Image (tube, rainbow, N blue to C red; front, side):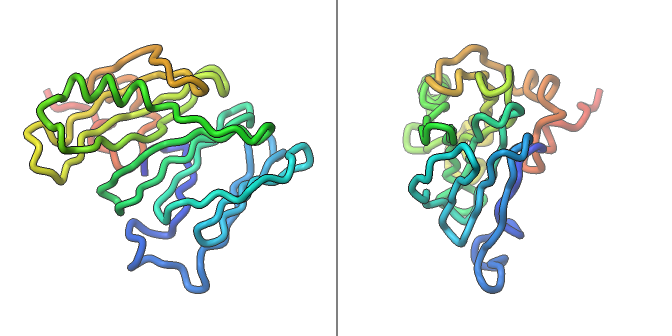
Length: 196
C-alpha cells in the first residue's frame, strides 16, 4: 500500500470484509534470511538464531513491513482506522529489541506547514530505506477524507531511522519525481508521469 518494496500483511484493503478464514498466519523473512517476522492474528513475533527471545508486539490488521537492505531493521507502517487512517510508522531493531519512532520530527514539521487543519492527524508511512538501515524515507499525508481545506497534501522526508531527525524535505512534485520507483499502490497517482 505505502511502499512498493513492502510486504502487506492483510489479504485485502478492509479489515472486516477481507478477514482470512482461520485468522492471519504468515511469515516475512529478512533480505539476508537471518530473521523471520511471524504474524499470528494481531501478534508480531521476531525470531532468528542471533535474536534474543522477546515479547510479542500487537499489530493492527492493516500493516506493512519494509525491511532495511542490511536486515538490521524493519519499518512497520500500520493503521488503527482502516485504509483511510490514522497510519503511523515504527522501526524495529531485532538485534537489541529496540523500537523507535522515526516520524516524530517530520510530523511536527508537517503540522507547522499545514496549520489550517489543527483537528486532523496526518497519516505517515515508510516508503524506502537509504544508506542501509541508517535513514528512512517517510511520507506524511493530510487525510483525503476530511473537512480540511488542505486534505490530500503530502510531503516526503528523509529521516534518521533511530532519532527521527529530518535530513531532507521533499515537495509533492519532488516525491513523484524522485521516489516514483518506491511508491506503493496508495500513491500510484504521484508515480504516474504528469501530463504536459
